[in-house]
Amino acid sequence: MTSADRVYAWATATGEGLVAFMITWLVAARLMEMVLPEPLAANTAMAVAGAIGALTLAVEGLGHSAQLRSAPTQPSP
Image 1 (cartoon, rainbow, N blue to C red):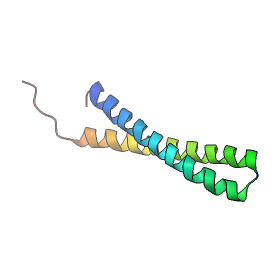
Image 2: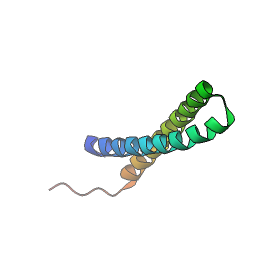
Image 3: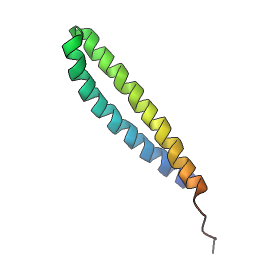
Image 4: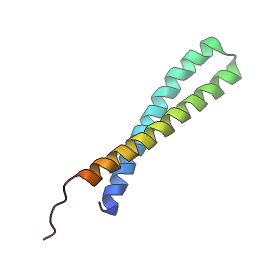
């Protein structure tokens, strides 16, 4: 696996993590506003979204890297 493959894997995982963060933040903010008082609801939603985004980044980054490591390599010319 080349360094370009590693950059590809982690850049893709970063994008997926950011999407998971944004969607979780929107949903969690609405749900937390119904249950918790205002300043605590926003902080809790941000913490939950950050954890989900970081978890998605780690899982997907490791998954993409593993797929690239196990992929057959092409012989160099």
